[in-house]
Image 1: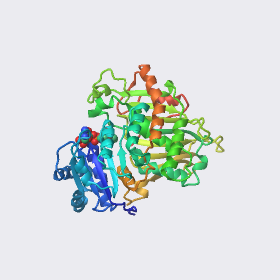
Image 2: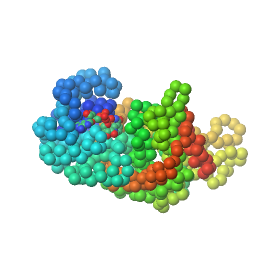
Image 3: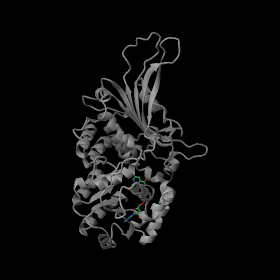
Image 4: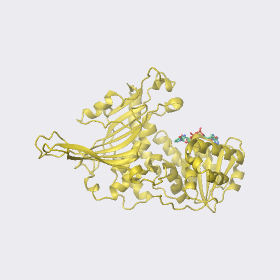
Length: 482
Ligand code: NAD
């Protein structure tokens, strides 16, 4: 089953930071895959723009090297490589200088879809936006794409929003959170709003609690010094986990369009309650015989930054009052695994004598690995001997269920959405600010208390205290497993 490809209009995409890590690892391979899939024609123009003094030919070599390294399709589709590279060009530009802008202007046209991808440090957003405007490069419909981190608190996010708003309308700004581009995340909306059987149960009458886990096995490694200024709350919770929480918790939008969906997500963020310090557990991974500790990686022996966080959150509205949302994310954990688990309440009474229940239905939405959904249901254990009940998963692994479907990866989908002008899977400015408004007091609180993160063993599920966070409530975390 080949996935249906709806071609996009001819476009000019300028990638500022086009020689950087993100461009090489994600943006260029994503564009290549979409080209191979037939989503755009050879009349598209993709222009790298960065400080390095490269010729167009040298940039195409750089892009080809990136494809060899980061795109498995490179070898299979070697015939398409030349046609793809033919669309690529390069302009040497310093965001804060005045060289190169006239050349860039000559290479793009306001008559087509124009997208400007700011794959550079946020401190350069203002300089880029101002020059795109003053050199009259960006047309009135032009789109800008910006990456995380979008600020480090509400104040800096507000300032970034204000800077972009000087030159671009909100409808032109695409703030990427690549979690929203994942197939399963969108399936979450299909599941909730496209089926009869879930939505009636989707509330505090039937749901006991919800767990959201994003676990990584890698440490902070080479980017430790950078990460140390951020930590798991800023790096993962404020954006990715909050977005997942919003999609789980939001009310059904009236229609499936960008503003309707984002209005509903914003309401969830606004209903999030402050989290008491004893409902937050922060951790740092220890050293092993062979691997450095978090503090070694961060090159900061007195670092109080967390590489792990677990928290118990509550949403104060009619649907969710009394239902805890447990969030957890960290580095160097047992397995690379991201999952949302919706744990339903246990039956109030069992008619089966000797049944050791309670049994719970659990809807698990796996983001990685093996994207898919499974639902734990209670059935009779096969064989004679009466009604013994067991819990078994009904598994829908997308790779098997949709065998042969070539599902685009997050960046592919998101970049094509930019070209199509669809903002549904991008964060709106007020959403990002509201998310910081919720996280800022929590971060300020532990900074003011000089809260020392708990140490945890690499390869574990995080600090012991994180287990206690649920034990205290008579619950337990789901296993972190690949
Ligand atoms: P990088 O350091 O690898 O590349 C930065 C790019 O910006 C280079 O092409 C460099 O030439 C260009 N640049 C730097 N200063 C410039 C200037 N004054 N004028 C013009 N160009 C300039 O960084 P990266 O990892 O590619 O990240 C880019 C942005 O994306 C950052 O904001 C980062 O936080 C964000 N991001 C990166 C990743 C990732 O996986 N790498 C993931 C999420 C977000």
